Length: 208
Image 1: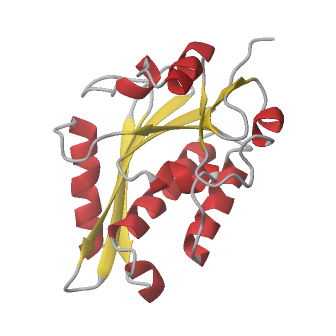
Image 2: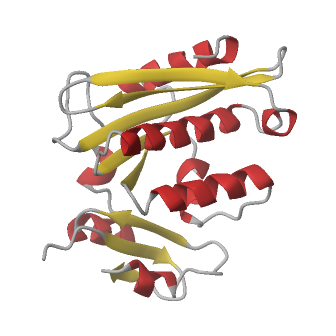
């Protein structure tokens, strides 16, 4: 049986690459400042542990690229308007044969305190939910705020109810769909990332 997921620990009780989360979790659970990620190949996991960039981490899809069937790429972002005290979210989901977008916004007082971060977390959850509804096997989330991955995986502490709810939701969804996280530098001209940014800004002012 082909190994489909590898768990790489860069900081923890023990570092290295593990074939099961059961084994890997022993070395990061409860460890402050732990750093770990999951990868589809052992080579990418080894590169993460060694600190070397891997193809999984560095290759960002260009306009017109498409994932393999039963896979999805999602570029997500959040936005915030200080005058309205309202945050927005947006994203673009790219499948093997089509793509779709979503956007929206809200002004819940507690969430508005964390501004555009609230929007980006909302976008992440909506993207995963949509891919799950379409029975996609794997979604790659391209994000620009590190908390999107760190809160979801548990490598950052969840210090408010919303980040805890976000963590719980993403962990629950990960039981039914494989989620890969890839950080994209913000505002660097990545086409799909710029599209997500514009959708999030649109979401501040319009619910859709």
